Length: 217
Image (cartoon, rainbow, N blue to C red):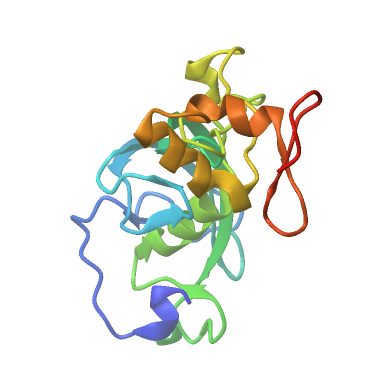
C-alpha cells in the first residue's frame, strides 16, 4: 500500500533521496521537468532467492509532467540484482531496468484531493513506494547462473557444472542388501566391494542361490 495512503499526514523530508520537489515544474498543464539522480535502493527489495541490496546504487532518469489532476512522474531505474541460482544455489548477479509511472494528485489542501492513489504534499512527492514495487515485480522468481545450469547431483549435492561429465556414483544397490554388503566390506571377507552379491542371488527365503557348478546345500 502506498505510504501516502497509510499516513497521509506525515510530513515529507525534502532531504530524502526519493522525495522530489515540483517547485521548478509549476502547475501549468503541459510543462515538463527532467533530471537524473543516483539514489540508494530502498529496503526489502527482494523476491525469493534474489534482491537489490539495500543502499546499493539505483540510477534514475526522472521526467515530471504537470497535468490538470496533478503531476505525472515517469522514472526509468537501473539497479544491480544479486542472489542465488535456483538450480545450483551458486551466486548470481546482473542488471535490472524498470520503468515506473505514477500520477501524484494535488493535495486536499488545494481542493483537489487524491483520495485513491498518491498525492502531493505541497510541492513535494515521495516516489520510494512506487520504485520499491516496480523493482520487486521485475525480479526473477527462478534466477539462473546460466540458462543451461545442470543443478546439483541428487546423490552428493555437488554442483554438476563443476563435477564434469564423468561424475557418477556407480550402480544403485538394492537397499535390502546394502547393510549386508557394508558388513562384508568391514570384515574384509567375501562380498567386500559388492562382488559376491553381484554374482549371487537371494531366493525368497533369504538364502543364497548357488552359482552354476556349485553344490546345493
